[in-house]
Length: 309
Image (cartoon, rainbow, N blue to C red):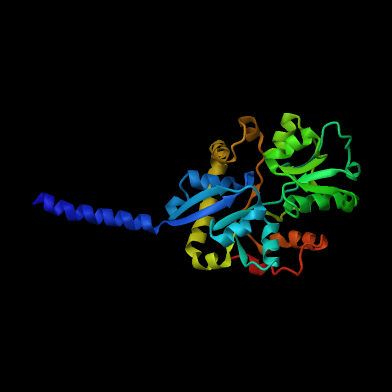
């Protein structure tokens, strides 16, 4: 008699468990290997996504520039990108939308900089005329910032050659002499300097205005319109991760190290940005203005329409 009552109860429990598992929304989130995505890593490792019904799989991609195609193909649902990518993608006819921020620019940041080859004779911005500078992606965020910084220093950027070089290869390119300088970011900036592959010519952050969006999370508009609850959960999990990181900085840094896979000394010295989850359209204005000045946009972007409520 007891056994006959137990079997239906067990079946009900299994059914409820299966329903709960099915309710989890699967989301693949693409990211690049930079410290802006620390909240993503912490939220994953500490279960902040899971408790909100999100089965999040972080997936590292080499460059922000490949993210729009990954979203369009459906291989990822959310992409963490340098903010100009959102403007460029929409300018080219895609319909992508910003969901949340990662960080905003701080003039006190030392996480981005221009490094030069040791022995290359470059002591100032003016010395870069006729030189070859690597950026992680042509017409990507650091290329835009590098051009702006040089122009603001009085350098004619048409007299500088920019070439594409992946973050992890920049140190070897400097050592080998195939480039004279590189615009790079942590953790690779710290690794280049600590290894002796190059010398920091100048941090770039102090010469840029404060408060613009460094990087953000985006999706297709179609996915955003169909997954409002998942997006709210995603934002809330990132916010909780920031609270956790503030109270447990060493644990948060260890979580980041699991995904960035950098040597312990580099991880320990890695600068973290000013994190900010809510994304405001005004935080994209710097990029819109600078990209138009550099002839990168065909039309004036509708920034308000590019940010999900």
